[in-house]
Image (cartoon, helix red, strand yellow):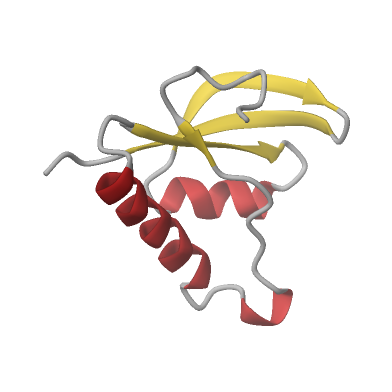
Length: 93
């Protein structure tokens, strides 16, 4: 089920977390790359992976932006506060 902020032609990533002791070691980047690979193999019609990140979580947003995500400029105000909407454009084979 897609969140209300997501267009129908994307896959969304939810609750991706890397334990604080393990942050900065590439685990989050590897997880996103594995998700992208799975999407390309199993859902080739999908061109974007999207997620929301809390505006207060500056470290996570910065990490996503450094690893291929871009800020759509959209925000969503949900039950856990205001979220920035980010997207990762998937490469085509």
